[in-house]
Every structure is written in structure tokens, then in C-alpha cells.
Length: 417
Ligand code: GLA
Image (cartoon, rainbow, N blue to C red; front, side):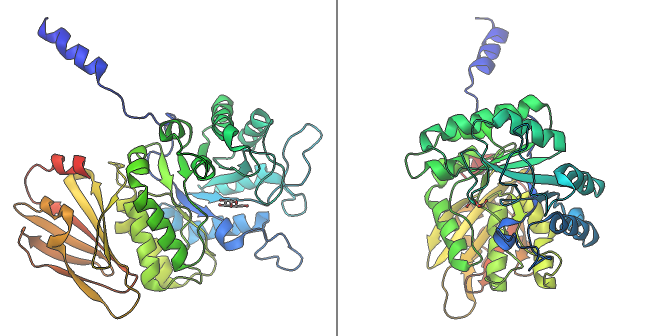
């Protein structure tokens, strides 16, 4: 065979990785704010006008996001969750917002959010009702997709309550098609695998082809036990879920609860570091109008955000569990590596660990440059494979580092991770 023909044949028959919903959205994990964990289904605006689910909440959040550096840090989407709807569809069968709490309607709210240079997210459900009992989209996918497009909505979180699990795939795919048919650029956030896991292992190839991100596991709560359970679920299913992530489609371990009530500062650092390693959407659920400066600084930490948004788009793995430490590693562009060391012991003081014992440390050959990002930014200089570099990790805290080889070829290592 002629050499040129042989090369061509090889190109044609290389098996292709799972395709993402290929419309140019979610090339990096989504960043923004989502109301659910902090504001839930608070619909009593007479009693609690400042915190109820109303247009004011999103307008105020959009204002703060611009004024307080959130937008500049990369947080872009202002997202409505459940409980925004009226219990009745309109005369034409379209969803409508609760008229008392959203008197100007969603289109006006989208215009406002856009005028701030931000994007608006909305929430609906693949089944008969939303989880909080508002009208679902079952049998209305085309109408609802068109309604959201007409309003100028930029993201749809599509929940999976009140749906026969055997029809979940069909429902999520049909809504995806309906959104694409509108011609609008609507980012599609799914919960398909979360609702399918109790019955069978979901098909992540199909999910990636359908959605831009997908929830796999239970709702996050404002507690360390909730964060731990999400991490444990992720590490025990990583062989199944990690290969599905990449530019255009991401695993979604749920909202960042940093800046609320339940996590110590060390635990907040752990959530931020591990969400960066997991290439997770960074959707904060907190009150940006009233947040402590330390949490704000953490959420806006550009070094951690850069790891989360790394253009290589590979999700990290848990690579070791030893001596009550967990090591998580994420390959980054430019043959760099991010390492997170989480101290799972919840007693005692800071504990030291040798970085050379981390599996990915082999990247440090013959020399590497190490930077600690958490708990404090510290340039640790040029190191070698035998270096006795130690990091100190607080109980339930995380040390986050980047390692940059000074020379050498490390592409092989990346394919192992
Ligand atoms: C489900 C979802 C949550 C939230 C609520 C709203 O529990 O997983 O993220 O959207 O519904 O009712």
C-alpha cells in the first residue's frame, strides 16, 4: 500500500473519544452563582423580602457580582433554582413566573442581568413536577425550550424529579434537542445520572453527548459531612466518571457552599481545592451581599480558579489514601500537575507530609518548580526527586500545590492519571 494511503487509513480508523454536546459551550467548567443551597424554597416575600425567591434576589446578586470583583474573577452565570414558577401554565400552555415575586417576568430579569455583562440561568424538570412541586416539563419540552430561548435565558438546570427512571434518558435527550432547535446558546445542566444510579449504571457516553454538566450524587448541604460524602462517592466511582469529563462536558459535584455557616475555614479551603482538582462547575450558593472577607478571598483566588479552568480540561483523580491523608492529582496544560493533599483526620493539629511520597511526584525529574497555593501562597523553589519538601496540613484542611517540571517529557505520566 502507498505510504500516504496507510497514514490516511490510520486517521480514519482511530476510535473517537465520547463526543460532547458540540455547540461551543462549557469548554471550561461553568462559573456562577445558584440560589438553591442558601435560599432554597423561601417564597414568603411578605415575611422575608430580602431573602425570598424573587427578581430582587437575582438583581441584587448581579449587582454585587459586578461591584465586588466576582465577575472579574470569572463568575458569570446568575442562576435561578426551583420555586420561581407559578403553579399554572399560561393560556398558551407556557411556563410563567410567579407574578407576585417576578412582576416584570423573566425576560426583563434576563435583560437586566445581561445589562451587567452576566448571564441568566433557570430551572425546570424533566418529569411531571419539579422537586418542590411546581409544573414539570414532561410533554412540553419544545414549548418550554422555546419559552426559555424567547426570554433570553443562557442556562437551564434540568432536574429529574417525578419521572419514570426508564424514561430519563429519552427525556433528557429530547430536551437537549429542543434547546438546540431554538438556535439559542443555552448551557444544559442535567441531573440524569443522579436519578439513574439507584437502578443501573448510567451511560456516560450518552450523557456527555447530551449535557454540558451532570450531577451524579446527592445534594450538597452546608456541612463537612456532606462535602466528605461527595468526595468519597467521587473517588469510589472515578474510573467510571472521570473519563467522561473534558471540554464541553463536566461532572458536577454540586454547589460551593463556601461563605455560609457549616464549614470551618480549613474545610472551605478543602472544598475549593478539591472542586478545582475535579474540574467541577464553580456555582456558589451563598449570600454575596454578606460574606466574610476570608471566604470571599478564597472564592476569588485566581490561582485556584486557574487550576479549575485549566484549558487541558482533564478531571483529576484521587491517587492515594494513606495515613489518613488523601492525595488528589490533576494533570494541567503545559505538562504541569496540581496536587491536593487532604488531611482526613479530625483530631489533633497540623500534620506534615512528604511531597516526594505523592504518586505524581515522578513528574519532578530531573528538576521541578513547586508552588504552594493553599493554605498560603508560597513559592517553594526548584526541587529534585529526592527533595525532602514537607507540607503541613490542618485537620480537614488541604494543601494545594502545582508542580512544573523544569525539563523532560512527561506526556506519559499524563496518560496514566
Ligand atoms: C433537587 C436538586 C437540587 C435542587 C432541588 C430543588 O433536590 O438536586 O439541586 O434543585 O431539587 O427542589
